[in-house]
Image 1 (tube, protein in one colour):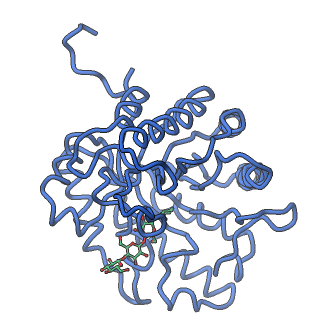
Image 2 (cartoon, helix red, strand yellow; image 1 turned 135 degrees about the vertical axis):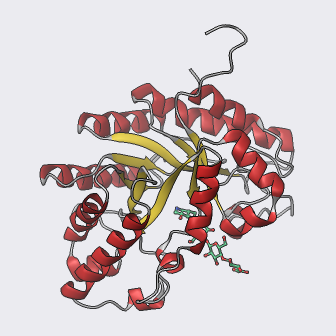
Image 3 (tube, helix red, strand yellow; image 1 turned 120 degrees about the vertical axis):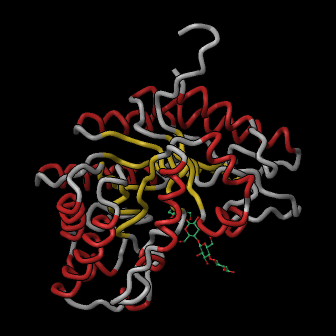
Length: 329
Ligand code: G3I
């Protein structure tokens, strides 16, 4: 490349987007267009939003996001088909294997089918691993596990594949990078799930590493690299799906906080890249102005959280520089 050529992005960077904010905030739209090759719905395609009652699918927000993406030359990821949370009451009340099977299949076929050919990557199963897994009990309880047993995983991926066979099917998980015995068991549980699916020829193509990092916690870089290598050895890709850094326990000084946040991202991405190149890097929001973090991790000093690549005025922070370094050649 010549010195003046625009940098080539070799790994798509993207962000989670909220439908309501997209309508209200011009600067938000502009930031997404300026920085992203990819977006994902932060909530609009979750079960409770897209399938609020048994007989009604509501694609209003999902369509709005995908149209915005396509009009601006971006791709869209799908999030998420099967998850214990963001479920409407009616779906939580599903009882028995027959009903569970048919409702899950109908949901997946309808939603994936709606966007067939337009969404190249879906989070099929989200957060399947138990918080504190043991050898005999490693799956998180949910309505599907309760009614279908662990076969629910295979069913979900098979239905998704049958609905659009061009889609990268992702199993998405958090806290894979943390230090400690509990997290070692979480990594083992996830590898076991993936191995199980592969052994049964279930179509599953990638592991999504959410990457909700915590500013005050070290990352187990060695274990993360090792995990990614093992995923690759099974023939699957990895991608980063929900990167952000909670900073509620970090010092008040902005500069200091931004530096720590960026260095966590550096450690996380560095460890992944040491083993393999992810197929995408997605942050869970783009600007500190619109982030889920203060809902759960409010700062006691009343200062705003700074978990994302752009500040509240859409100016790039150190975290964005790190991401750009990893996504560009
Ligand atoms: O829209 C309403 C608003 O009208 C109302 O005033 C307000 C009062 O609580 O609630 C608003 O909805 C909230 C919505 O976020 C706003 O974006 C919901 O209550 C709240 O449950 C919802 O939380 C989302 C959460 O998933 C549960 O679906 C977060 O935004 C979203 O960032 C979070 O994302 C998850 C990923 O899907 C999976 N991985 C973890 C990640 C972070 O928790």
